[in-house]
Amino acid sequence: MTLGTRRALVIGIANYENISSLPEAVLNDARDTASVLRAAEYCGFPPDQVQVLLDDQATLHGIRSGLADLASTSTAEDTVVIFFSGHGGRFPTGVGDTSALLPVDFQTNNLLGATLPEVELTAALAAIKAQRLLVLIDACHAGGVAALKTHTDEDSIHAGFSEKSLQQLAQGTGRVVIASSRAQEYSLVLNGERNSVFTQYLLEALEGKARTTGDGLIRVFDVFNHVAENVRTAFPGRQHPIFKASDLEDNFPIALDRGGLKTPTSAQPVQPDHWRTIETIMTDLYPAGPTDQEIWARAGGDISRLKLQGTGRANWFAALRNLKLGGGGQQISLRTLLDTATDDFPHHPELTALKDRE
Image 1 (cartoon, rainbow, N blue to C red):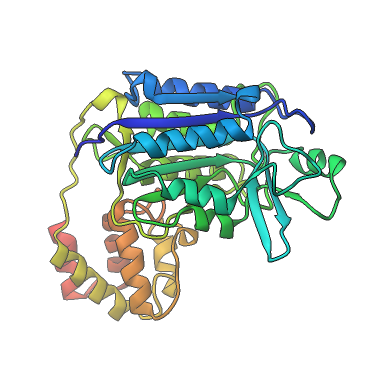
Image 2: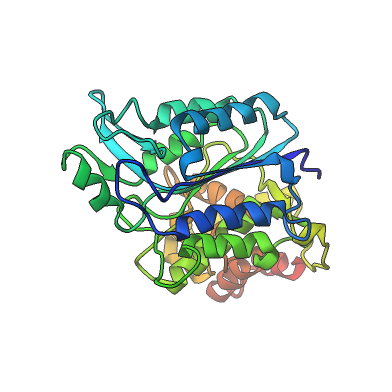
């Protein structure tokens, strides 16, 4: 699979004109992400296709122009990555709450007119023709709430991006949004560290430390699984990265893996009829779905990664599709799922036969 032309827009804002500054790590996050994307030995983006906007460059006009450039230059075959680190805000509009990215020239007395609200940002993303689009948002930094409320009506604005707004941004085929944390959490920056915790593990993934298929490409679930598992392990209960996609048909690649290095892998592709058989067996053994007898969690999966609704069969279909794409949790695989089910039902002939074929 080719990546087409790889393009990126990287935005980092720490020193705002009208509200309190964020840590220097915010700028380091943007600089280092751009450097890894451009590096031939890592992601292999053409250097002239990675646009970086830092502090005074990241005005509302500058961000709009950067997004418009991606819309005018990208084709369906291209791969686009957008990274934002800075203030995000949630505030009422009269017809409901909205989330927005705050540019460096954000005006505290003009919440809607001086920000990039989710409706405008969603439209800007939809205008980008690339069928592989990854948006990374780190917009809920510690101190952000205090900084915003010091300069605005205390009840009018909250820091961060809501999960509903993130889902809105992810509308469309081949669109994925990864956020550093839940809206009620902070994106952690440790004293003395160059990068935020989120970006530290993002950089690791882009530098080739994530688990991949070994074909020389890094895919969206490779990135998210590495970041989410490591952040949550390092700071349990304090920060939970978020993955949003509305119509994800493929665990699509977003960058070269260590410059395109291919490594041997023992994993064999599972045929479509094989997946249908697994779905039938799992529905029979665990009719309530992946939460039945905690089978998904016991197999190493993360139930929070699944969108569970409807019948048990529907939930198994969605969960196995997620697993097929490489999601569902860093520790789960088809092998661990079958092993766990076999422990529960050691004399099930079809299950035993499936396990032997793996």
